[in-house]
Amino acid sequence: MTKVGLIGLGVMGKPMAKNLLGAGVCLMVNDLNRAALDEVVAAGGIAADYPEMAAACDIILTILPNGAIVREVLFGEGGIATRLTAGKLVCDFSSVTPSESRSFHDALAEMGVGFVDAPVSGGEPGAIAGTLAIMCGGSQEDFDRLREIFDIVGSSALLIGPSGSGSVTKLANQVIVNLNIAAVSEALVLACKAGADPMKVYRAIRGGLAGSAVLDAKAPMICARNFRPGGKISINHKDIRNVLATAHELDVPMPFTAQLFELQQTLKAHGCLDLDHAGYVRYFEELAGIEVRSDETV
Image 1 (spheres, rainbow, N blue to C red):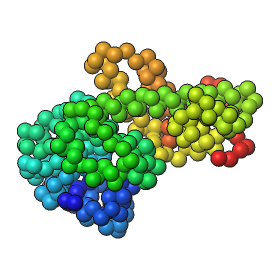
Image 2: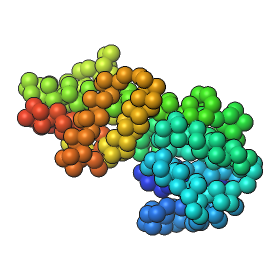
Image 3: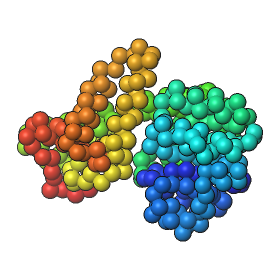
Image 4: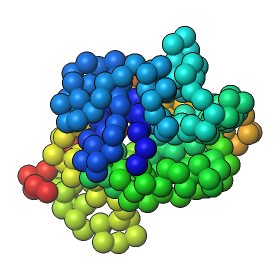
């Protein structure tokens, strides 16, 4: 495999980097968090600044908190684009808006550089296990060049359509996931307020139509009061803001998603942004005056 660069060693990026290294990929890495960078270098990664990485690597991967940071890393002073040459390829795993992805694609295309938007779903557990779902926008040729990388970090990768299509798909994914978590939270608060053990309620309904990957992932966390972040509310808050911005551009009313954003705003005001999004339950607990707990364990 050609030399690969990865920028972003956060909750998702760090385990992805380790999986790439474990598969024998020659990987150059960069992150502002020195501890995370040192950890990946100890695992075999090569620390490099943006120009060094762009000059040495044929493929550059980014997984960063938001579109503004992606733009700065790519096109800012001393950024990746300063040393990119025609024929190279950038793949952005970040969750950004479709319009941002298309703007990155178009600017890089003028340089003869390929670009694929490839946001992921699966959270930290999926990143660690290498089972992420990868949603892609770009050309078939560029997608095929990334197939080996996708097979290492994920269990499925699908090219949805042209540039921006991956980011559109991720926005739809985030609407479904986050509203589902909110619904699970609201339902468990109801069950607990009515005197039922919420873990038993979960076990009773998981095999029926209410069953879902979200229910299985989040109900036990809520019942155990485990809000250690695999997917922080802060990241999902950003994603839902992107959903609403894109919806407003397209004149698509999204009343449920707008209400979800206000739920997130309330949790932000109460200092809960660093919780896992299972922490949505705290919003409903505050309204109902009860705390969801269970004597059962997972």
